Image (cartoon, rainbow, N blue to C red; front, side):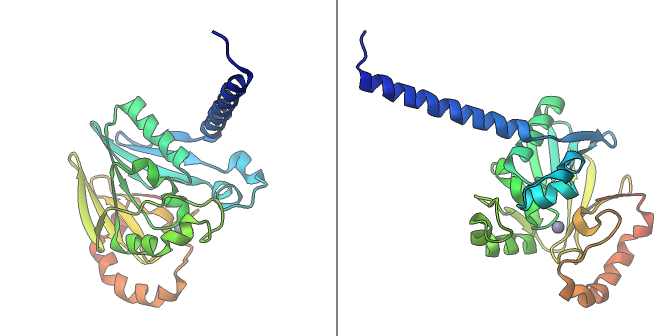
Length: 250
Ligand SMILES: [Zn+2]
């Protein structure tokens, strides 16, 4: 069969576009560099950033800030179910974690628990669009309010998160969830941000505390609420007996 010149160019153009697309996809996949640590029989820690990333020349909020600081995600698993605490700084990173859990542990059912609304914790939510994403009502409210600005890259600058996927299961202040027989107590404190959502695991006295603790220090962002937090949170803190906490992970 003879092809005319126009058709040859047409197919060459399609082939070039496909090659560029696959190279671009590979580059994105290769850019994901995540370290995995097992902390106990049900708890994994995924870490990205620092190391070479401290020399990043980019000034965007991912390479110029979040990756320099380092970012971590916890995954709790039992049987074929996993709960992932936040979704990293990109869909590619979140998908990498999801793939790892599928491949290495045979996880089939995923749930995300959101620690707070900050972009370096919610950017990968799109990878969990078909799963439940649990968060404080406050977290959803803030994300919905800022959705247009975040999706256009105006909130923290580029890269934009588009689409931004807010939590679809929400609660106020306190909720317990179970992963198999493992009880997780979710609780809101106005530390770092007013929507901070911590996970306490009473069985092993482990507290996963998101950004309420960074490098052993607390960075308050919603500073205007500090007075209110100190007054209102005292009775809650006393009830939870944090003096019992044996491991506290940021
Ligand atoms: Zn934060």
